[in-house]
Amino acid sequence: MAEKAATTERPYRDEAHAINARDVRFDFASVPMHYIPGEVLATHIVNVMHLVLPEGERAMAQCLAEALPHIDDERLREEVQGFIGQESMHASSHEGARKHLQSIGLDVDSYVSKVAWLVDRILGGHGLTGRAGEEWLKERLGLFAGMEHFTAVIGEWLLNANILAEQGMHPAMLDLVRWHGAEEVEHRSVVFDAFQYVDGSYARRARTAILATATLLPLFIVSTAYLYKRDPSEHKGRSWIRQFVSATRRGVIPSWTVFFTEMPRYLRPSFHPSQLGSMDTALRYLAHSPAARAAEH
Ligand SMILES: [Fe+2]
Ligand SMILES: [Fe+2]
Image (cartoon, rainbow, N blue to C red; front, side):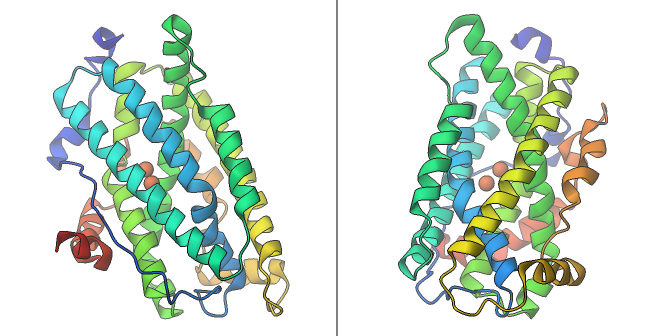
């Protein structure tokens, strides 16, 4: 299968930037339950990242590790290895945030166990070998490439959403989501390129991307509703729907329509993730991120 893919163009080569995991450190000790002050629903929308991302990112790292033996291109192998390190770091950092919130009363352990079970059931390797194993690997690479499109788009949004700092979002949480967002922008092309290399079928790319969208939106809604309900605070402010409309209007959360508006762009046959937003903004943030800098010392 590598023979067909070896001809696939990979424009990210031009970016001449090597992907590497950063050994970040976050101190969540002083983070309150509603760490975007006065924004209960928006806080829980951010919390979805702590709740469902770790398991998904581990499954993705596992899938890319399975893809490595099928990739002969040195440069792409290097990118995939860096990607695996970055996603593993994202998973453990969000887990740290979730454990802190659990310790101050947001009890979500049973939900996390269900997500872990579901992710393993749906996206695990299932012990398949031979032709079936190869097909399943290609299918998962397609799904993850579609999901990575959304993480790159949301990552770009997080880097530019100045309103989060203006609203007084706790600096540790703000740094966590921005560092993560910046690395999503930084490695936005890796899964797509791995998929193109290992398979490259447009039909599969389109089908799996639509499936990824159809899975992510309900997962987001169900997880937010669960978090909001589990929040033990007596006062949650206005009704969740009014908070949702207000937060969307003021740009405190990204627009939910992104799940629909982004698909036509991703489905363009000539699309490549390197066409997404500014890599400079991401790298500039990573150069200044308190957690990333702490890792350097
Ligand atoms: Fe990630
Ligand atoms: Fe990612």
